[in-house]
Length: 298
Ligand code: FE
Ligand code: FE
Ligand code: ZN
Image (cartoon, rainbow, N blue to C red; front, side, top):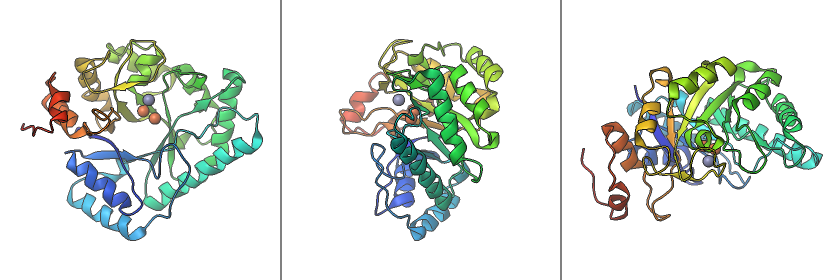
């Protein structure tokens, strides 16, 4: 069954229940959320009553909670350990995120591996693996390393780098990968021939490590290293390639998560993009329709 959703909010007052309601409003059957603002490390207490209510509603709505994803805040950087206070703050913050995932019953958390910020890629890889080894080993939560666009000094834009990190991680059972189509394309991978890409992934890392796919188009051409997401079908990757990835048999049970931009920074595109993905037919007027909030019937 196609598992499709988007990143959704997680607000103080509604928490998991609010995330679920937003998901349902998009016609989605899975979702990803940050346990607080993605750009900061402020976190509030988890309300178990709201979690319970959300879990019951998910049962009614046939949403497989074991596939729901949390994303760690992207300011957390394990790639550079020059300042040990900063590095340990990142490690400890991630430990806290993992605890919140456990409290919420979440199985998978996506993490940007990190940036080496000048210490070099080899050192960066070691720093990341060392941090992961301090965090894993004693948890049921799996950390999914996201493939990166290669902006600045980001580690993880090459599959070999992800493979090296995984090789250094002791608790292999709790380390996985999240593919991001925009990042892969920006990193220089031609995903038009996605089966070829998957074969390469399989030989370097193992296809069973893929636990999540971020489905985004890209505002830039292959290899641009920019990391600017575009709405589905409106960028350089294109609709057919993305549909081919979304419906790939080898990734059938893997959640597909949209992180495409709001239209005019105001209108969430997900309900419309999800409908278009289900139809498998590109609508080149989609963004205009979203802007005018015209109702789309399937
Ligand atoms: Fe991400
Ligand atoms: Fe992503
Ligand atoms: Zn991105």
